[in-house]
Amino acid sequence: MVAANTAKTLSVTLRVWRQASPAAPGRFVDYPAANVSTNMSFLELIDVINDRLTVQGEEPIAFAHDCREGICGTCSCTINGKAHGPGHGIATCQTYLRSFKDGDIIVVEPFRARAFPLVKDLVVDRAAFDQIIQAGGFVSVRTGAAPDANAIPVPKAAADLAMDAAACIGCGACVAACKNASAMLFVAAKVSQLGLLPQGQPERDQRVLAMVAKMDALGFGSCTNQYECSAACPKAISHDFIARLNRDYLQASVRAAFQPVSASTGGGAG
Image 1 (cartoon, rainbow, N blue to C red):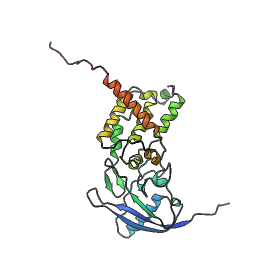
Image 2: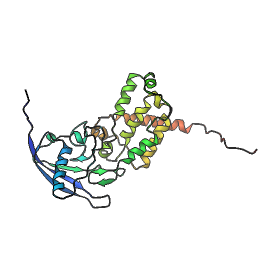
Image 3: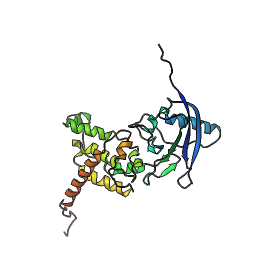
Image 4: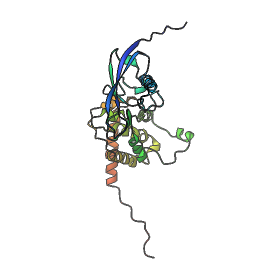
């Protein structure tokens, strides 16, 4: 027996930030959408509006997306003042129109942060996150193949925490939600997912010092412990990781300060 289609429809207006380039002036433009299904995803609604704009010979709305399954994080935008929209623990692409009411005006704009410069419309450049990862978010020592990794005992509590941290998809919602545009939750997750495992221990101090230094150099703000970051995170990553990052950073700084300086190995007089 086939279940009856219980989908409802509603009419909304998308008030979208349009900006042709970083140097161009930006403004909000209203796009009405009538009788759209409440089972339609938010990105599908933008697709519908873009199809209409294309037929009319107008420039479609630029927005970033890839997986549309809440995995890649590229769909990031701010909806009605909240990173990723009204839902909890979901990305923009997992937001559905049933989250809104008939007649709503939905304000859509890009993430606002100095470290995330605008490219066009709803698209921002989040390459700063890549630079933080390049500074130390990796393991460069030999860890062997998968069977070798499976042979290394890892306490379950540590493994579970590492997996929780590894759930970060690097979307940048934590930065957009923070009034200081801090990247502490992102950096904390990336530091912790390796620092909790045996394979991450040899570079543990170097990793946290380098990643925090790069975060600061890129212009991200400081953390004020208001936890907007974890509230907006589509993977609900706990702000407890920030406390772990602070402890790791303090310990690494102390060890670095008291580490003896190696003698020069340069060639002397023959």
